[in-house]
Image (cartoon, rainbow, N blue to C red):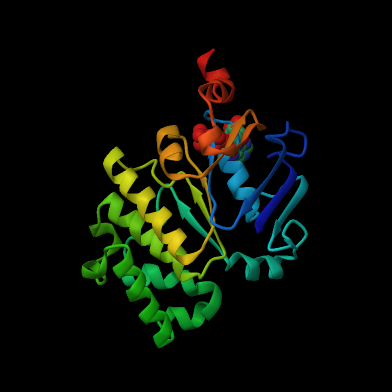
Length: 250
Ligand SMILES: Nc1ncnc2c1ncn2[C@@H]1O[C@H](COP(=O)(O)OP(=O)(O)OP(=O)(O)O)[C@@H](O)[C@H]1O
């Protein structure tokens, strides 16, 4: 079943500027771990950010479980974003807050700012946060400040926080770019296995092709805002990679 449908998506940063995305179409289905690869400046990050409208598309359609996202009002968009978890390259944790509070902040879209300020989270949320921290291997670090953790541990907090939203879709924007190769593999494996267990499809912008090939079942190859490849990872040939990265080779 198709969960996210993107059709003819275009985006630009200034009214008069060139299109950064030049008509992108693809479907994310149940069970997919979809990688977006391509050279620097290809538009990978812009594409991820158009899905939850951190960047406003200029044309085209993005539909999640049949709901069109590009035309939602600000209020409707806030509600829908609850169901789209996001994991960032720089983790985006609040350093002075504990690991537990960072994870609980994933519920902000549900409990409201006032309740969260006074830490009035329902018992079920606290229980869920503990379960997720156990799942990502951080149960012994619950009370530590976020800035006392290593990069890999910080990204694990980011993963638990995104899962706290009970997401229907996970968006990953270069989740391993700040991590060393060994920790990057561990983090990708954790995301793949957890998403699979919880039945959450993933769309992931990643510049490391080896990691994408190892962990993702589908690949979207972008070059200068155009789609050069969309298919199963097993069908991605060296000649496809040459076409996707052509500009860099030149
Ligand atoms: N906020 C912005 N304002 C104007 N132009 C931008 C903005 N963000 C990105 N761009 C431009 O849009 C193009 C695509 O950028 P984007 O970050 O989406 O590419 P990317 O494939 O994710 O690159 P990288 O792998 O280097 O992160 C680039 O030319 C970039 O300079």
